Image (cartoon, rainbow, N blue to C red; front, side, top):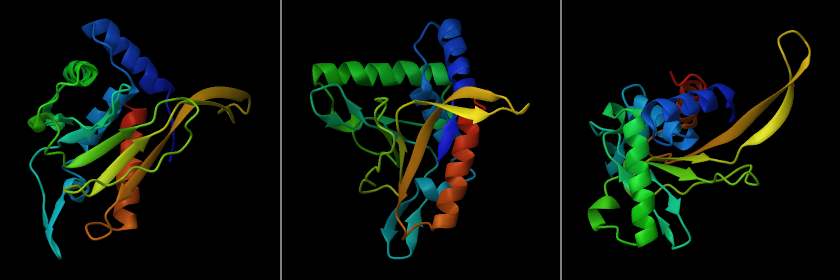
Length: 192
């Protein structure tokens, strides 16, 4: 799904200035994912037996991090109850841990949804892998600039990203997945 990003990027810059922590689109997207736990619980569910799922009480988001020392998927816990600037600090701490190569097993287990970051601007689409124990994996591709007809009919420019979603059909169907992706897109477009 193509998502206009200009409002979110401005909001991220304002949060960075206000809290003196680097807040970007990934952090806003993590917060948006967490905000959807109550309305899309199956996207966070875990299949425990055929036809039986466990719906968690918190949004524990595994985020891909690759700083040149291998791919890691540390978990940001209780995202739905964490302010964005605190998520930014926790994500930066995970990036530093990845640089040092000092993750503990507890840092890398317990995710109930995944965010796969592919933020190089040359990446236009990405298909994430649904990890064992999860039902959904969201992908964020790189930023693209596009021209579009503005409300007055004049040509305008905007920045967009592609959000993708891979999901386990044993837990949810395409209609539910698309509703989640639409709500995620709306939450990212209007982060305040």
